[in-house]
Image 1 (tube, rainbow, N blue to C red):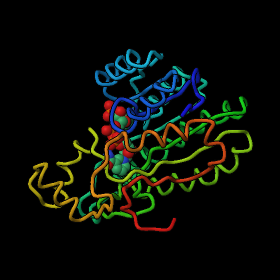
Image 2: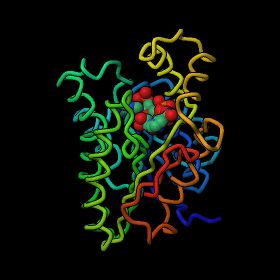
Image 3: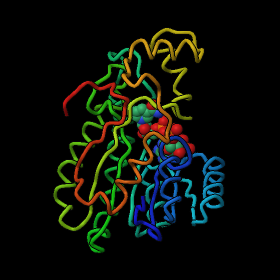
Length: 264
Ligand SMILES: NC(=O)c1ccc[n+]([C@@H]2O[C@H](COP(=O)([O-])OP(=O)(O)OC[C@H]3O[C@@H](n4cnc5c(N)ncnc54)[C@H](OP(=O)(O)O)[C@@H]3O)[C@@H](O)[C@H]2O)c1
């Protein structure tokens, strides 16, 4: 399928690993020039070089923290006028006892998972409106719709994010600018591996991959029967970044193997 985005310019904020990297790969494969951000420089620079070599497009790495104003300004300076904006920002790690969450924890969660994406969108929406075309995709979490006690640092802030995009997307669709969100369930990514130890601690388990995964699968029924990899969501993200999604506005696409049992 031709995504009809060859030659366009995209930002993948959070594009050096996991689902951000997989999304960046699908865009690069479709002929899009990329600006990718991340906090850790070496992995970022390597990712940019690999994708540029593999797909023959320009991939510019920007080492910047999207949850901080300074990092966002670095992104805005490096790429003032993207056609496509995809964003993922990692929230704080899974929590233990909810009674121990302080206002400081909440502020950290809100800065990363809510204010970060909102500020990046707010900066780029006027330019997209002026051009009469733009696509914005947030990679958030299915715990925005499927509350989980151990993901209080991710779900509530993302519930607010999808509330924001539900309103804003309906205002800007008339200018050809669409916002949609992908809400992933459990994906085996570099980031998920890093969280294993925290998950083990939260549930009082030994920090052994097999033990953690057995516990996770027992407590989180995934009808599809497996934990996904990043390529299981990237084609959907790329589709939402294309003109083919022109009638998809303000939606929250849950990609979770059927784990969240709901009509909506
Ligand atoms: N994996 C899952 O099972 C799962 C489930 C539900 C939701 N999610 C959500 O999906 C998103 C992607 O997860 P993933 O597992 O693909 O993560 P990942 O493997 O850790 O990849 C995240 C990417 O974003 C970058 N990044 C994270 N925070 C950033 C920040 N503040 N500023 C700039 N770049 C940042 C990372 O690089 P640096 O670390 O170098 O900055 C990396 O390139 C996350 O928002 C996560 O909460 C994941």
